[in-house]
Amino acid sequence: MTAFVDTSFYIARIMPGDRWHEKALRAVRPGIAFFTSTLVVNETISLLQARGFFSAAIGFLREARLSPDISIVYPDAAMQSEGWDLFARWGPAGANAIDCVSFAVMRKMSIRKAFTFDEHFRTAGFDILR
Image (cartoon, rainbow, N blue to C red; front, side, top):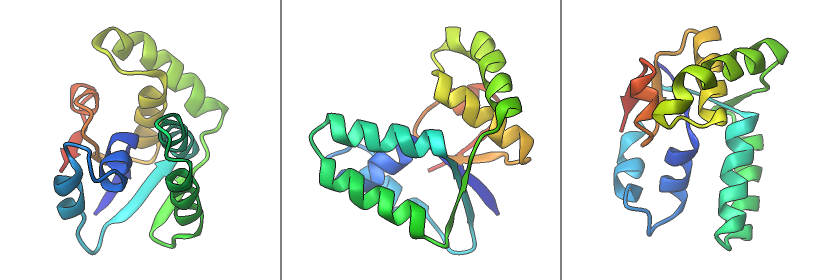
């Protein structure tokens, strides 16, 4: 199985006080090919830093960059442009610009499932794994 990993899932796994922490720890199973994007990595480390967890941000960044289990997608101009188009569609429902580029990445790579606690992925037609 192939799955995209969103910021909300990373934050839940990293932060023991997050309401989804235990669920995020139990959700991952062997045999899954994990994909995320540079934008999700940037959003995750920025949120951790803003919450006062700079060391956790650096640790996450190191792990994401070195892990053979995570493929990081660098969205190209076409994916970014599609993400902006999708923002016009899904933004009114609450999806942010990074979510919409994630949708574009998932569409381009034919990924239907996402590890996320963000309902906007379901709204946009993807399956949520938890």
